[in-house]
Image 1: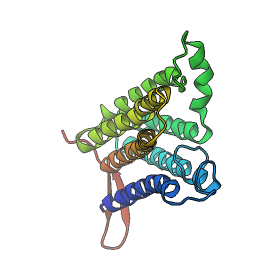
Image 2: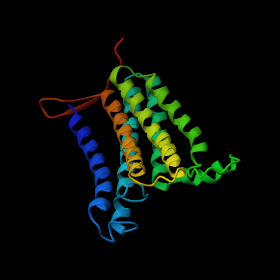
Image 3: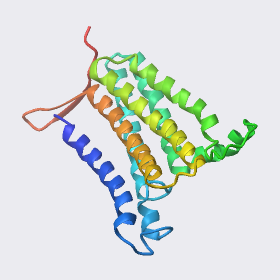
Amino acid sequence: MRTKRIWWILLGVSVVLNVVSMAVPALIDHPLTTERGEIRMYLDVFMEGNLPTWWSVGLLVVTAVLFAVLGGLARSAGARSAAWGWWCATVLLGLLSLDDHTQLHERLDRIGRRLTTFDSGFPFYWLIPGLLAGAVVAAGLLVLALRLSGRARWFVVAGGALLLWSALGMEALQGLLIAGQESGPLYVLTYHAEELGENVGVLLLMAGAARAASLRRSPGGRFTLRYALPSV
């Protein structure tokens, strides 16, 4: 069974949420859809605890569950090294979902400020300790990728790279724009690109999990899910 259709649907929802986030305040001039209006705050990807946040957390949780299942399948297939890689990545994705849901990274801001001796107007000091967390996530995904082969490996590598670049690199770019007194369309496009990049990165990780599994349906309608061992 092919799962491409499901992946494209999930990608479409991510794109639509970003487009709606930009379009509603730009096209509808109403107190509810502009400035701090309730509808805008509920749809804006820049805000936390709203619809886009729920979607992002959901993608991370679903991918973490898929990775956990792949770990079990790999262990059953005798690929114990790969199983530990999947489970390690499962824990990391679970922590990322927790961070996204509870805004944990923003609570690192005070730590980041203590590590610096200057004030340049850059607002996101949490990125300083966040780089360490990003390195841990990168290392965990690399450990998994080295135990995979073919498209599954490259989906995991591409997904992890895009996720981390969006979460850290694009956030740093936003901070530089704010420090330069830029809060117009360029800034808006940047933080929407960050959110969409994170979603697409997670979807690529999801695709890597799908490539590492074989889901077949027999003529009798019975489904069989197996781990796709790398070819020698």
